Length: 258
Image (cartoon, rainbow, N blue to C red; front, side, top):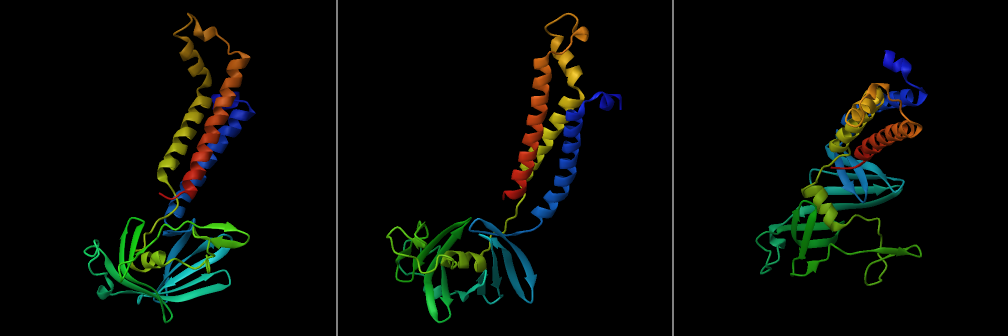
């Protein structure tokens, strides 16, 4: 208690802030990390079950995005006021391209939008990497790069995409057959923020003892030494830096995915 009374306003504010961050982020991290979903175009769409279907919902570029997946493999997608689909994803072993070098590892699939076949062939997926081969052996380029200009979206051949907001075939396959669930909240950064807070609190609470302990190796009577203006300024700068670093680590870990 005597140490607290001896502190000036700045270290008191920093100690209260560090304690508040610890309480707030200790509550937020379990809540955020428990909300699992899929990562789609830079947004986390949270998974939920209802009415016999699975929904993935969130905000995408300021608009509400919702994927609804039925047990039969039908997908409906709504982005803002625009509806896409319904799409149908089905397994079909006869769609695997015969004679292709990857025929043994490809899974036969078919993706439709209404009566239109969007893709029919072989599909291979591992940890976010997709490979598509049409039934006739042609390979689908899943690494197409697009750029935007003049209100239009163009691929590398400079042809305008029909609708850049429509979900890709590769994503529809992943969504139905092998959804890769993730969540926000990187606990490693939480513990980094906790460590920085603890270090900052210790530096404030034991500022004078640490100062004199360091002097023990350089002068004969450290107990009678008084900190200079530069020493006092360095202390405050260090306290603020550790508190800011802790806040940055907490926030970064809260919004990133593992």
